[in-house]
Length: 280
Image (cartoon, rainbow, N blue to C red):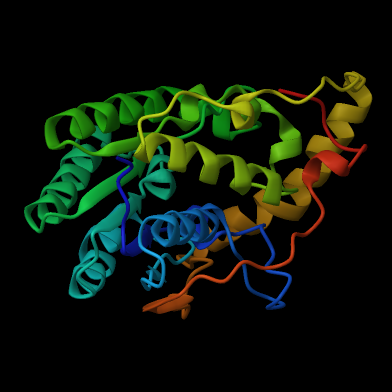
């Protein structure tokens, strides 16, 4: 019999907040993979127990480090007494050259252990493979070690993992927004499908299949694209870092309380766009 959940709380950073996946029903807000997963889980519950109420909260805030996720966010999540928590964090830490990956893993494992003691299930996610990404590809070694830790933590505590590193479709730039850090609606949808499959122990489906290839950009066009990205996105990010600011300063959780997730209209899929960098 398929497992169903009644209370799902998501904690994390901009990835779980859903950045670059605009909510068509709420201008200026985002959906993201966790919102999309919550809708699927609510549907699963209705099939099993018609009339039952599904509750979903999303406490993730962009820019947060793993320490923030594993302390304040986790405390608030546990207070809601969920039976499923997704905890995805550490990406912002890994971007820092002196990040201690083993220490990050210990912090994550402590958080997972706290959740499991309550009887709730846990869903984690590995980083995506940054191979071929400007600047960020320098973190590939650290990200790979962290991914290995995540799988080990999951095995020790009976948790679920979205293995983003192995999803070939996410190696395509059409799955990524202009900032090359956050996913498009198509990317978030595929991660939501991967999450649902992981929770139920299912193999990869169509969501994991790569997109049809695009023509390769010339070196000149690629250089121009990279230069524009550096001006529009890398420079502002670096400036915030130097000033000690975060994109999440003064921001609070978008869904701090349990409520029923409502399906909303779909924005245009990233695969409908002909222009853009080639597959990486």
